[in-house]
Amino acid sequence: MSSDKRNLTPSSIVLEIEGRENFVLDISTPDSRKKLSEHPVKIKEGTTYNIKIVFRVRFNVVTGLKYLEERKRQGVLIEKSDTFMGSYAPILEGQPDFEVLFGEEEAPSGMGVFGRYDVTSSLADEENNYVEVHWAYEVTEDW
Image (cartoon, rainbow, N blue to C red; front, side, top):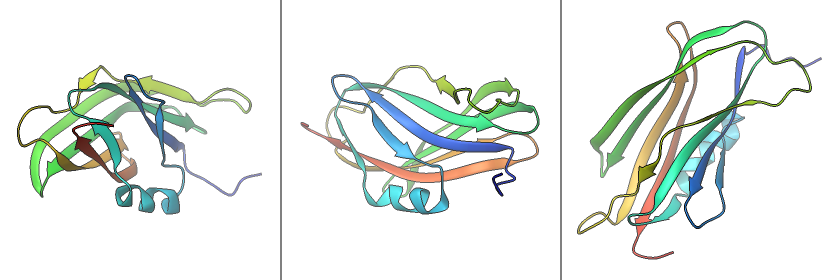
């Protein structure tokens, strides 16, 4: 029996990038989350992509789950979003994790968009902040 008492256990943030293999950010442990901002995901300017969150609910229903995200460029906030994900019942052993796919996004394009973007992603409800992840992507001219 696992000693992990968390009700919601995050697994990954997946970037489904047009024309590329999915890029999986492991957010399952504090150590894996700590390393994410050190290695930015490279995204070609103007490329279309989706973000998918993978997680497991273990003991009690999670109601009002939200995905919160802040994007910064050179320390300046450029975008903030708060997306309602819904309510989720516990998953029985052997069942697949929940996967929530968000709408299509487009990487910045044009003059002055190249470089690093720092992202803070969180999964939270009114009572709990289940995980906060700091990661980064880099907009490039080419792959």
